[in-house]
Image 1: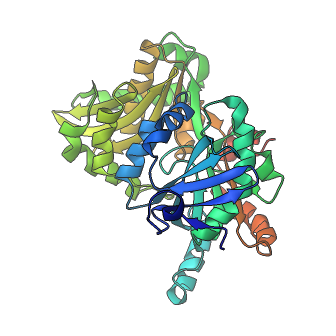
Image 2: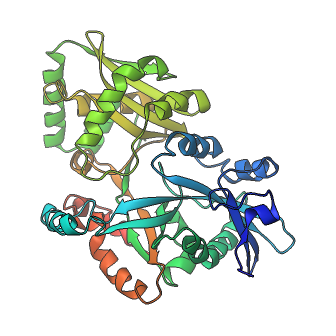
Image 3: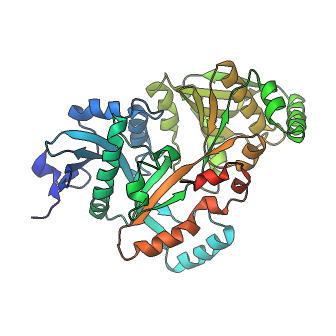
Length: 407
């Protein structure tokens, strides 16, 4: 008998991969499902309870971005049949050249005229399709067991889904020790595009500028703020639900992602609307108006003293004259200081202003391997060159750049 048993034979009567399957493992048994069954819901919730992206966020992403990714859950059971962890993963066809220098991408596009699938790879990715990756375990002491178990079974799961690459996506550096079974056994660990963080140990925004920024940067910022003040006033609002404003803000989001060199997920109107409804205790939304018209917005997640800037939208018909990037950033940081947040956290990309504003890089790691044992050694060598962080000259200028590849 094939070691993969259809999930219908063990649970329900459905035999398709999308419905689920299970197989034996050295530590017990593995089950793959497209939903978390009700009997496992308490474990699923507990495994993410301390995470900024709790179970509600994963479920919302799976429901609203499902046309971009195939989302699944990996149930890890011991020999007694007890589920010890539920790890989310997804499948996507990814362009391996995203973020590489333009001359390389132009060459690849020429090759794709004859071979459209060149360097487009079907990947199995462990983690969150719209956020950082985490090992989902209700107990920190259980994380090492989860890591070892995943290392054992992921090649089999990838084979079932016909994925060529296995990737642990955007795992924070705190996982480096527990994920050594990957980095020391078959997987290459390379820097993903890092996030950035500003510690908010200041009494005011003015104190932050005077203590942290160079004289030239302070002068530059004040010049921008004076120029913006000469235009019709731009006023910030803090709202709890984006649904009433979605027709105005979504086009601003599209303007931003259309300019992005690297794109992964694309948030949908439903995603934005449901964030505030699903996670009202954690979501914070900021809207900027000029003469009543929305010209910018920001989606933030507030958790454990950190304000995380998730998505932004800007009206580029006024963005440059009004210095919207810096005006909105100032307003959010001021709000975070006044509301006693410990840190302001922002996602990857747009590193030049972050460098001058004295943010520090927050390393995020990718762990990747090819499912073919004979291709994988070659893949691990070329992956170091394909990583986008290697080709961004601004990243290298951050004082803590060395942390991206540190042990």
